[in-house]
Image 1 (cartoon, rainbow, N blue to C red):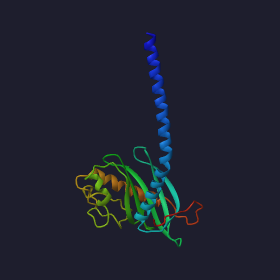
Image 2: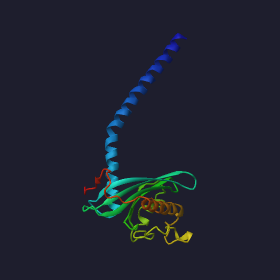
Image 3: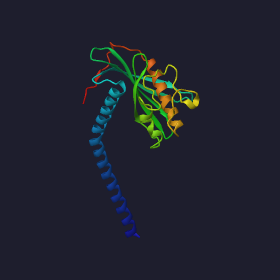
Image 4: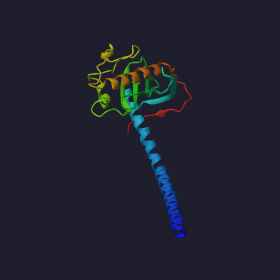
Length: 209
């Protein structure tokens, strides 16, 4: 019996040591990779802002966070990147907006000019079905079937099935509604943020890579 107990103790000790060692290895790997991952995210965001604003070499004059509650009481958070050109002229803003799509969160970055017209957009995150909802990345771009570029969401954008003017992605009406809701909400958040060219906030210049 003592031999059995001894074996169990040894097994527990071995498993404990293995768990501690593996935990240390994972922590070390995370420490080594977290920096590069954050740099990649920052670069992707910087490139995305230039893309949706249709302008290279612009400057993020300041960043605002807008919080709103939806009809279900859930807090919605929008990040507004106010931009300027090299002469300090207001170019409008790029806005991060997230809604619930068919497969999960659908996060978009939308660029608006000072009048609120859409300059461009890109998907930052999504879990939509490949070949269907995932087409939102291209479907609403300039020249495509659901083209929203140049439109002003002061009149909310909706799909034609709901009496609106935008063609939904084929077989992906839920994703299309979620995408347009994200764009409409981004517009509202942009209109809630005042343009302040003299802000003391840290400026971030987006240079051509």
